[in-house]
Image (cartoon, rainbow, N blue to C red; front, side):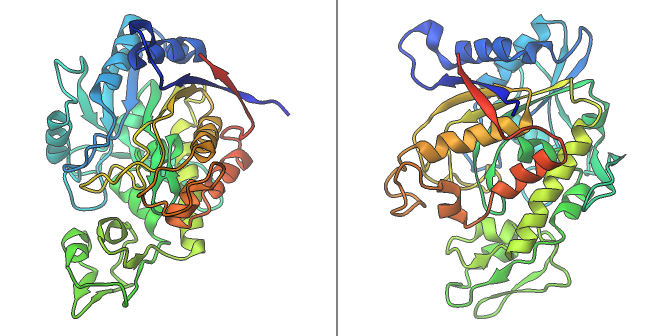
Length: 368
């Protein structure tokens, strides 16, 4: 079976030439990511700018290095993400741009503009035909569609409904417009674990559709719930079940279908970098950052979005888990770290992506 190349740089460094920024430059060159765009191309650098209060989002210095690489090769880089479905610091372009700037994604730290892909209120979108199992079309941010090339720059970490959040989550969910995000989440039906709910009300404050009410404990109206999962993310008592197996499986497959649509006309003009550092249990959407479940590992780069996520999962699972984290006692090397934290079959997204031809799970790890 043909394997895809995934290039890897270890976290260790003892001299200037081995610092992570220089390693990143070598990874980009070795993997050919500096050749996925042509001179004059508008190059979308897809990031997650982090929710206010979160401190584990990717450092802007890494984005700055990617910008410099693109610009030096004649491309025209811009940083981008789409607005969120849930209420927070990134649900419209004004708040989103403010959050990005406060987190260091602004000049002179990063020599490129920030463009919110789906516009002021998340409704600037393009509908792309995919004709797949769940989606006939996908609704993506207009800037993502109009960009000449896409480079995904991803903080690899856990995710409550997908097990892990890697390049496919960053591109598929991240570039979905607000309507697209709603389409992806509509099969997820969270429920309240009554014996664990303390009635704190955080889920009510964070629910964008007003579906959660508080009596002695929380309750969720299934008719008005949009399945965004924000109640699960914000609950300090782990009292929300994010939905059954089927709902989480469909969500993962829809994210893959969105990836397919976003990359449909850019398969030769896209590349991906995963930073397997600060591997927190949750994504960068909650307004906090929990303790990492494994030590920092390194950076990966590839033109194959499936292979890079598979390699990232494998590297995390080979590590010894850190004590006193959400892993509990499941810290042994080889333990499925993401299943231990979230009880989610994350393999669904990888196998389905391979099935529809988005990439290969079989890879060759090339250390740089």
